[in-house]
Structure formats: structure tokens, C-alpha cells
Image 1 (tube, one colour):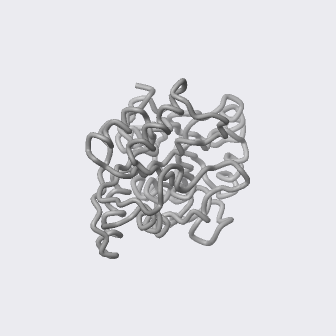
Image 2 (image 1 turned 180 degrees about the vertical axis):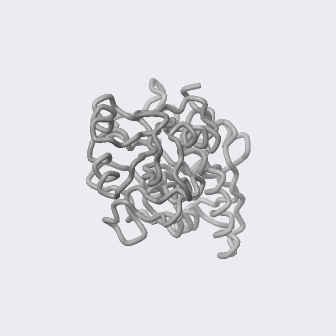
Image 3 (image 1 turned 90 degrees about the vertical axis):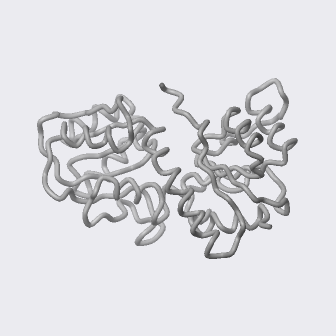
Length: 268
């Protein structure tokens, strides 16, 4: 039977921890658990909520692989007085290890950004900011097969991400042809808009757009299509399950990977 340590090695083959943002921003890796504990079933999700933890217990899963770190900011106490404390205590008492593959999965080749670019059918897609390597880094940029009306591309985004709340910053009846993608929270800083502009993009698809960034984008003549953070990343979880299952088979690990059914969008 596989161990937690084996699964950590497996996920690192898919999304190396060295590709994550460092300098204290991110918290990628094994967050809770004993490395030698046995694992036969792994639950995959976007967020480790109390409902997801209860699901893992019900399914008898010994490990959770999440995109977002359950422990992100430093905490100085773990008690049942807080949601976070209860989750940590529940995981430990239930023998459930928790691993986070956050920006490691964002930036790595074949990760979420590449998958979203593939779903959008971008041609000649490549890394927008290849500060890690030629194939690993922040964002992706590529060309549409033919130019499209912004409103038509917005409708495609809605279908791809099953998202009824996609917004547009810019003119809906302009044409766009070169698209930049930053999955998740790429709307928090104007520097991301500059990266897209420098890459020659006339459209940026990202989430969590702040007001001043929206103003900056509009004034600089780039359209922004903004799906929700959850929908833009959750679309990848089924693909992650498939990839991990393939990796496990290739390495002869007897492990079952399952996509969570309790991992839901908090905004709906």
C-alpha cells in the first residue's frame, strides 16, 4: 500500500513544489499528516471545507489533495473555537493527511493555466512570464483561431466554466484575437495587466478583478473577461484526478483518486 510520502512524491511529479511562489506568500506542500501513514484513497478538491473533511471521513479517504492551502496565513493557536482549528483537529484525529498544490499547480506545465488555455482552444500558447523556465511560469498567452466578438468569447467562457456570472470590462462588441490567461486571482494588481499587454494580448481572462485594475485595463485598451475564481480553477479538479490516476498506475501505486462532491462554490 502507498504512504503519504508516496503521494507527496507523486504530486510533486505533476506539480513540483519548487515551482510555487515563495517569499512567504504561498503554503504549498504537506500541511497536516504523518508521512509514513498508509493511503489507499485520496480525495481531490479546490478547498478543504468542513463539508469536504466530513466527505473524506465518510469515504474512508486517508488523504486530501487541495488546490488552496487550508493553512495559508500563520496561526498561533489550534482549538475548536475556530473553523480552522476544528478542521485541523478533525484531520489529525481522523488520520487524514492534507496536501496543498497551489501556485505549483498554477505555474507548472500541464497545470491549470495550460488546461484553461486548452479549453479556450488557444493556438501557439506559451508562458506569459517564464521566470521559472521556458514552460513553467505565470499565465499563458495564445491566439484564437479567428478573431471573435468579446460577447461571443464571454459566452464561451460561461460554458467552459459553467459560470453564469462572468463579467466584461471593455466594449462587448469589439473584436479580440490574442488572449492572456491567469487562472484565479490575476485581477489584484495592474502588473498582471501590463504582462498581458507586453505579450501583445488584447484580452485578459482572469478572476478577482479590483476596481482600480479594471479602470487601468479599460484606459489601456485591453478587454478583461472575468469569471469567478472558483469556477476558473474548479474546472481542473477532474483533470487533476485523471492525471494523478495515470501517474499512480505508471508507478504501480495502488491508490484511488476521487473528486469531491462537497466542494462547492461559496458564491452561489
